[in-house]
Length: 211
Length: 117
Image (cartoon, rainbow over all chains, first blue to last red; front, side, top):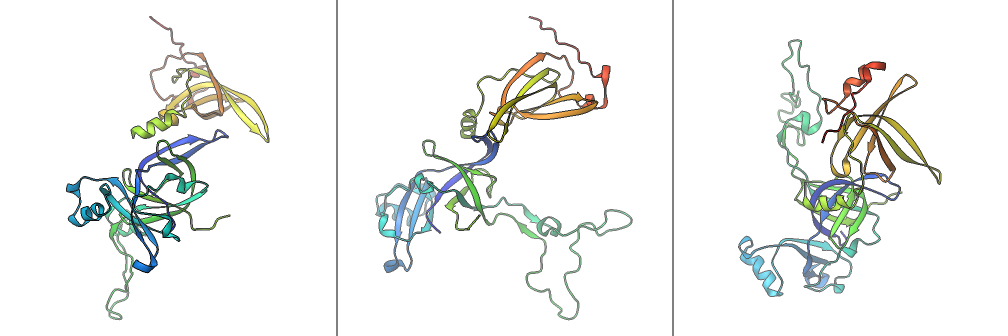
């Protein structure tokens, strides 16, 4: 993963481009991002930088976290995240990560936590078909057979069943980066982005090739 | 809505939009780009619906052309809309005039609103 930005999803709206077409966009607000640790192959086995964002009060942090920030005379941050980088010697602890990392980037990958749907049945969760609603049928939204009987006398692993849906890490690739507003620290991405408003999303230059 | 998004939307709002209400007869001038030429086409009809707010505000304009009902939805803050002229104010008791779709001829007339001060 190359260096990107972490921001708060504010919501969606639409803007007009030069041709006057309306483009649906998700607005992401990027707070101050500071390098909190530099990891190198020699010391940690891999090259990465750890970035902190969203200012926090001490009462919301553990002693270990407070110590981690105090050691380097940093402010307190609520969210810490690592980005793999190729040359960690270009960064030092305390540096600010500027929005300019998204300069000249056309498409981005956006990672977030999807909206939790709770415990859902197979119809909603796995797109199973439902049974007839009438004509004496009592098989409305049942999962149907979950396997053979005495042989193998168990349910095979990975059988799609009812359970918790959503609230998982989701990445959407190749979203068009419409605009980066450095003054207001806003990033506009075409289309929708995982998660509910107010949740954090990670935006990195896309690793997928496109035509 | 988020205040930051409101601020962002403001930069895309037009400064001058005439107050359009359902029942009004309007003439909408739309910019049409063909190749690299730009021309303006007018669409005249009755506003049967107002929808949305802010950047997303649209009006639906209905007219009957050669016996066929035509409805167009205009995103009124769009730069593709050159201007909107209100030709006549209508006095209606509905916010959505879907009933006009089932009517034709004289039955589609709308009473004119008389401004009282």
